[in-house]
Image 1 (tube, helix red, strand yellow):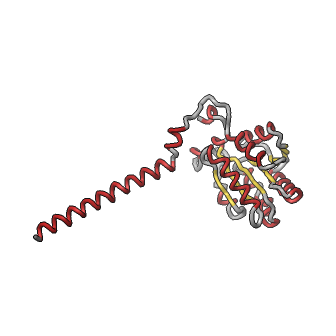
Image 2: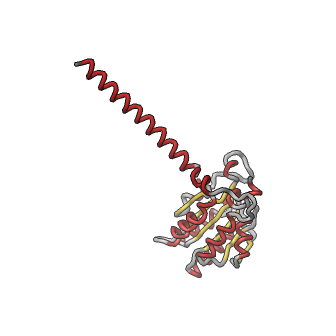
Image 3: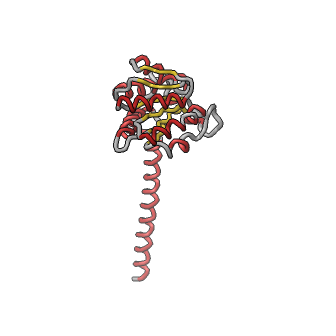
Length: 220
């Protein structure tokens, strides 16, 4: 009788271990699929010949939120945003220094009651804005700062003007985010704008790696 019970217990233990292992593997696989968007990629094939790009999506989202001005110091990392915005009738104001761009966006926010928008290039473009972003934080101004960044795959590998921008902006902004996929642009900008204007207003920051803004054939 004891041998039978031992066998039953061992069999149950074996089954439980097997279920645990299989469950762990399935859970890990589901996380992998979700993280890399494999199902989405399978259902939505990339149109490699398309001339559309992330900069157009940014401009359309800003236009839909009533943005009339973007203040900037033009740089290659963010050019698609500026070109697309100008085509949609958003006035792009090119300044002499990034801190001036953010101060101007802050002024628009205070005078109009709408969100002020500034866009600057990666690295030193971002670091140059710190004083103005802190000013907007203390003044409780709804401000959206968009910054360029190194290509996603090159981050942390010494790419042009590649620094950890988030560590600089998180203490100053109500909301910070990095765009990792094109489909994240609209919901991320919507969330950023909502956060900037809700509760106690303040600055928010969205980082755009260069590969999320340019057409596919240029970044492949």
